[in-house]
Image (cartoon, rainbow, N blue to C red; front, side, top):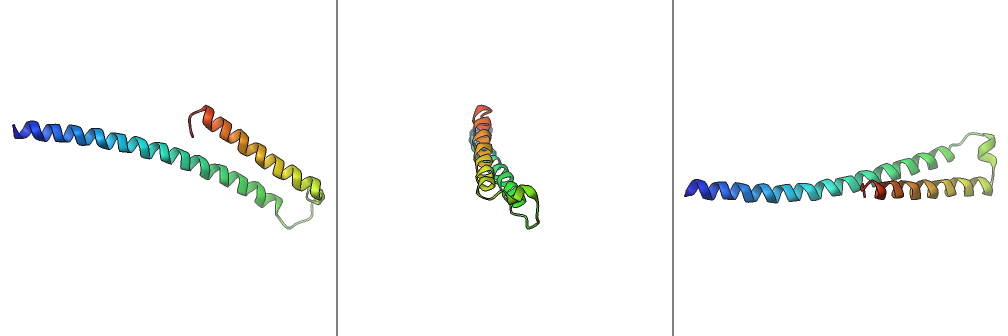
Length: 88
């Protein structure tokens, strides 16, 4: 009888730990996706904020709007891909 109870306990704990691991896995997928997205946006902002003369960087307001628009478009595309592939 004691071995049956121990076996049942192990079975229940295994099921519980499996469900908790599944939730943690989903959370880690979402956090990893958000981290990569923020890293890419930080890379774009860092490159555009470099302090050296180049013709592209002297575009004024139009250049700023192009960079911001491309960052927004990249974010929307990444979120769309993430939703489509069930990453988020």
